[in-house]
Length: 410
Ligand SMILES: Nc1nc2c(c(=O)[nH]1)N[C@H]1C(S)=C(S)[C@@H](COP(=O)(O)O)O[C@H]1N2
Ligand SMILES: [Mo]
Image 1 (spheres, rainbow, N blue to C red):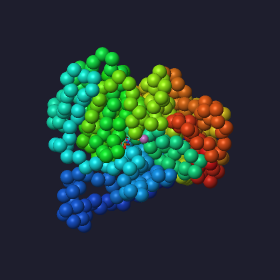
Image 2: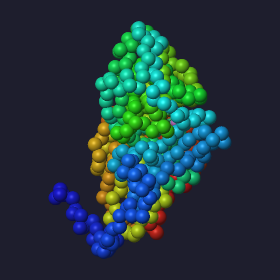
Image 3: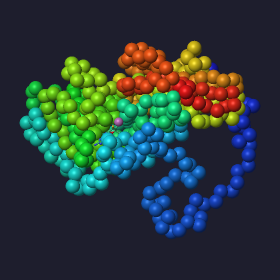
Image 4: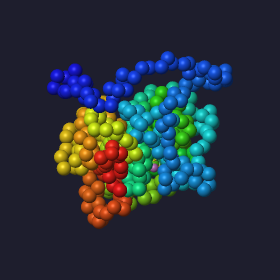
């Protein structure tokens, strides 16, 4: 152990954690005891988590799922229970367009077409795509609608429209080179297979950089809610560009104002290509709204930071409502356009305080405060303030003297 850091005993002395360690363990009984054979077979075929673990996704409060047509899904990742940087596929947030549905696609029937301003239009089956060289990369996705409101109680509600997974697929530049992009082309339009088509205009420069056509997530085929059998990954761009059920990529010479692009793309072509990147953004996941500290003493503050601008360079934490800041430690690799876990040792003195985190990405961009965001939009900051664009503002959590934790925006 690093001799400069206080030792672990020091952390725990006098805290409730020790009492827990001293408690005698009961003799464990088998997980399968008394289970019907069918259930045991299922457990062997495809494992499940402990019955004592009950972290779940919940629908977005302002937009209940399914909607009045029984269609739209907007469900939030339980970030308050997260550890590390990978979101389990079962807990990955889901956002589908209004009026859209989760299609049930037979991968044998599915095709990807690449056409438009190309020398050789191409159509791929899933089997053909899987024969090609592939990459596996860890990236976050975040919906533009991931905005904190004072009415939100938990970090799941304020920040749960982001998740992070390992994605595997064929690099898009490889496919585009195979098709032969013609001169004069400057954008692609990528389209999903549902009736209300997910379609987004993406600058060709980005498409030829780090995009990939992905069929796997966290080591298994994509989940239907995440775009089975194929989705486009556009690392660091807003969620809406990560086209699920991907069936068509058209190479074009301008952006198209599609259903998706409305409200997301800047109509000025000079800046249109610059306005898709998310963040930098960070949030403390423990202690966060709705959680309860058991008393004064040692706690490890833990949180996530991410940026569409690249890797996270540093994270700072304030335990006094932003008056002073301390450097947090990065507790995971700082991968480009990926959730990055940070932490800080903290001794809570039992008094009311406000916790905040702010991050800086590799471009040197610093996460703004809510006041700075309001100033940027030239709007007055009040309690009901809603960020009109992407909300990457600093999130305050208020720890009350009784150890309960609350949304600091309330
Ligand atoms: N085809 C298609 N792609 C889509 C969507 C959709 O409804 N249909 N939703 C978009 C939006 S708004 C977001 S934020 C992300 C959400 O991805 P997820 O549901 O896997 O979290 O997918 C995007 N891609
Ligand atoms: Mo979204």
